[in-house]
Length: 105
Image (cartoon, rainbow, N blue to C red; front, top):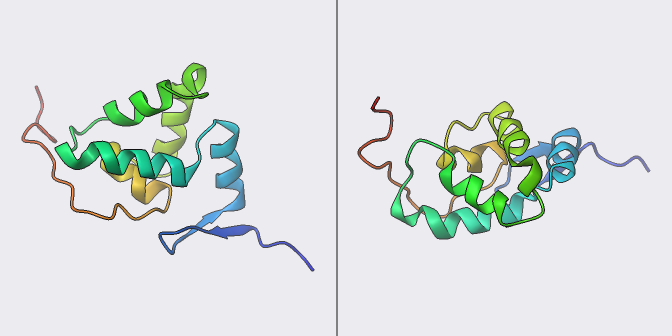
C-alpha cells in the first residue's frame, strides 16, 4: 500500500508531504506553531512576523528562524495571522489587525 503524499491537518486542509518535510526540517510543526500563535494573537496582528519570530526564537529553530519565516512566506504568509493559512491550520478565533496594519510608517 502506497503512502499518501499529503497530510490532512486539523484545519481540514491538506499540506503536501514535501511542504511538511521542509517545515519539519526547519523545526516548524504546524500544530505547535498554530497553538502558540492562537495564544498571542488575541492582542492583534501588527502586519509583520513579530510573534512568529518570537515563537521560533524560543525553540530549536533559533538559528534558522529567518529561513523558517521565508518558508512560511513561500507558503503564502505575509504576517502572523496569515501563518494559519500557510500551514493549513484554523485560527479558532477572530483576529484583528491593529491600526498600523498595512499603513506605511
